[in-house]
Length: 477
Image 1 (cartoon, rainbow, N blue to C red):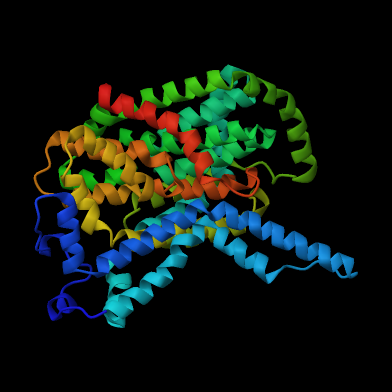
Image 2 (cartoon, rainbow, N blue to C red):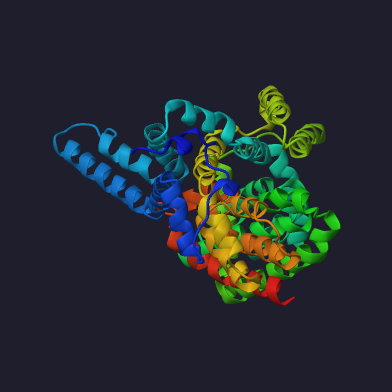
C-alpha cells in the first residue's frame, strides 16, 4: 500500500496531536484518522485478531490433546511406542495464551515493514516501546515464587487463617483478602504471585468444583486489580498517571484505597456465603492432600531466617528500583546465584512461567502502543459515568495501564473524569487475562488446576459479580 510522502516522513506511530481531525462525531473522527493514516486499520485489525485468538485458546488445547491421543492409539495398534505429534505440539503452541500476542507481533512486524520500511520497524521496537514492565514482572514473579518468600508469606497469613481454624475456607478468605492489599506495598505482580502460589497449595490442591475454581480465579484477579490502589506506586494503571496528575499517597488512600478494601470484603463475603457448604467440605480432603504431597513431593530443609532476609532484601531492591532495568536485572542475577548457593533450602526456581508471562506482556505493549489513535478520542468523548463504563469495557480488551496512560495524553480532563478513568480501569482489571498486567502470572501458576486450561468465558463468569461490586463502591461511596 502506498502512503503519502508526508505520512512516510512522519514519526511512527503518528503522535495524537499530529492528526488533522475532522468531523463532529467520534465515528467521523476515527474514519478520518484511518484515511489520514491507513496503517491504523491494519494495526488495530491485527490486535483484534490476537484478542479473538485468546478466546479460542482453550479449543486449540483441546484439539491438541485429541490429535495426540489419536496418534498414540494408532501407534499402539502397530506395536510402536507413543511419541509427540508435530500437529499436536503445534496446536498446543497456538493454544498457549502467553504466546498469542507475541505470535501476532510477527504479523505486525511484517505489516510495519510493508507499509513503511525495516528501519521504521527496528526504531519502533527498540525506541518506541518500553519493555521495563515486562522485564520487571519476570524478575518479581520469579523472586516472589521462591521458597523463602513463600514460606515467609505463608507464615504471616497462617496466623490470620488460624482465627478461622486453619481450614481451606479460612485460607481461601485470608489469601483473597490480605493478598490483594499487599499489592499496594510489594506491587501487584508480587502479590499475585504469592497469592496464586498459596491458593494452589492451600485451596486448589483440595480439588474444588469447577464452578468454585473459576469463582475463586475471578475474585483473585478482580481483588488484585483494585487492591493495589491504596498507594500511588504499586499498581501499574495508577503508576501511569500519578506523576502526571500529581496524585499522592494521601490522594489514593482517600479516593480509592478504602473503597477497594470495602469492595474486596463484600465480594469475598458474598462468594463465601454462596459456596459455604463446599468450602467447608474441602476440609475433609485437605488431610489426604497434605499426606499425598508429603509422600510424593518432599520439601527442602527448613529455611533459616537469614536466607529469608536476603530474599526479602532482593525483593525490596527490585520493587524500589522497578523503573531501572539495569539495576533490578543485575540484582536478579545475584538472586539466582544466591538461590543456587543455598539450594538445600530452596525449591527449584522455575523460570518458564515468568518468561512466558514476560513474553505475553511484551507482545501486549507492542500492540498496545499502536492503539492510542482510537482509545484516546473514545475516552475524551465520554462524560463521567459513561467514561467509567467505557474504561471498564476497554480494559477488558487492553492492559488497564495502557488505558490510563493514554488518558494522560487527553488535554483538559476534569478531576472527576480522571477519577472515572482510573476507577474504571482498575474495576475492569479482572474480566480477562489481558486486562491487568499481573493476570498472566496468576494464570500461569494456576492453569494446572484447570483441565484443558483456563476458559476466558469461565474467568468472565467468575469475575463479573466482583466487578459489579467494585463498580458500585467506586461510583456510590
